[in-house]
Amino acid sequence: MTAGIIRSFLPALVSRRSNRARGLWLAGLVVALSGFCALSVTTGTREVGWSDVVAALAGQVDSIGQAAVSVRIPRTVLAVLAGAALGLAGAIMQGVTRNPLADPGILGVNMGASLAVVTGVALFDMSSAQAYIWAAILGAGCSAVFVYTIGSLGRGGATPLKLALAGAATSVAFSSMVIALVLPRADIAGGIRSWQIGGVSGATFERIVPVLPFLAVGFVVSLLSARKLNSLALGDDVAAGLGERVAVARAVASFGAILLCGATTAVCGPIGFLGLVVPHVFRLLVGVDHRWLLPFSALGGACLLLAADVVGRIVTRPAEIEVGIITALVGAPFFIWIVSRQRVREL
Figure 1: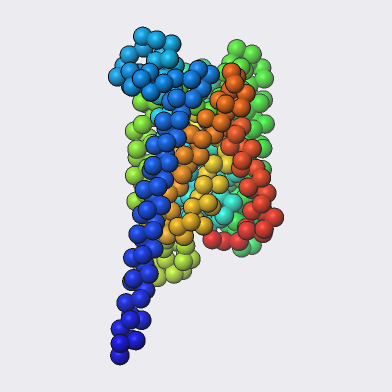
Figure 2: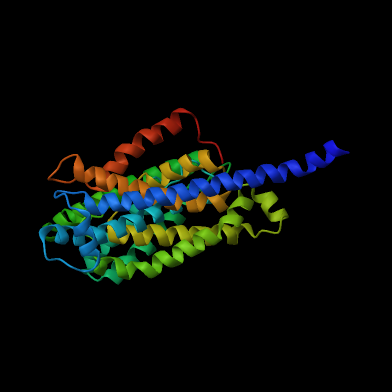
């Protein structure tokens, strides 16, 4: 009798302990993010003291150190927002497609957003921040639909490997189209090439503010999709049996990810591999429950992008390496490791 009672309460006890451990990990991640933010505003070509940081936060720019910090503050804010958006979007895409190789870069979503922006600039002289954002979101959405349609053709439907191949081919094709659009336009070539690398340097609050509403909606929609993604992870038939409208759930979650990818690409350029690496790392740490995985991926993405930005400022000081290059150097070996371990089955 006693043994039966213990067995009945054991799963709840284990779950409670597990949730407590996840909560501690989440709190630790918030502390780590705060540390990276502090490192970001104090590290660069010129070292600054905390007195300069406090003064710059209060709006003072009376010294060179304070001026340097005032430039780094919006850069840090943009890195946090972009990293969180891409980490969260990667987790959403992996959950929607049940594809461990899903990533805004690998599936061609970022490059679709990039192509739309470059087309607008090269052919229609697009210049406003709002136009950039809408073009990027439209391009990201069209690219996602195109890749999923191509990956769904043939026997077996949209398998993880077919989606990855379709996304890679689409990215290469869109990249070639971007080059074709930019080459005849020497007047915009320099700026487009710099933007295409992907980075957060030169960030200002004037650039960040227009994108905030789109990111806010994307974050809310994505985080509210956690339970639906848990249902989808059981398989379409089981999810439908549980009363889930599979197509609607997939569309809503994808919409949130597309908003995040498009808005981030509009302001930062295409930054690859972050959405691939971060969800995998935290899936090993906290498991496959999206109610935990999504916030962990957002915070982890912000930490990784901030760390990449700080490293890019240090390694070639006084010059800088954009975060798009650093994340590619980290993400490419990780992608190869996943493929070599044959982790291309459904999640």
